[in-house]
Length: 84
Image (tube, rainbow, N blue to C red; front, side):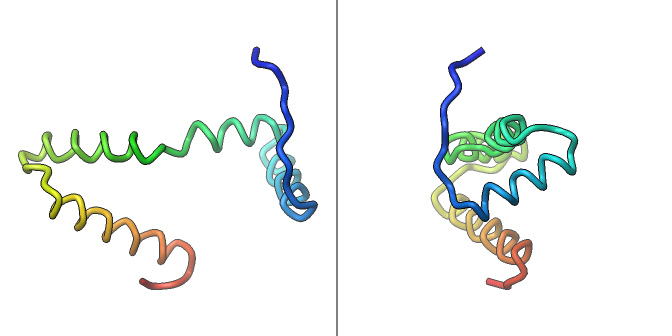
């Protein structure tokens, strides 16, 4: 087990994390661990995009990369309730 540490955040964020953890029957620490491991880093996302292009038989060019990034930006905008 790793050494415990603290993260500074606002009271509002802490309270929200507590509610989310309670709703899931877990702790704030476990919730944060889940969120941190679920989200990919930029390097991991890029590697998966390269692998997906290879599986589809597509050459992964800068143009393909940009189209993919634009598509994900639109998806995220719609998830947040605003269209890009």
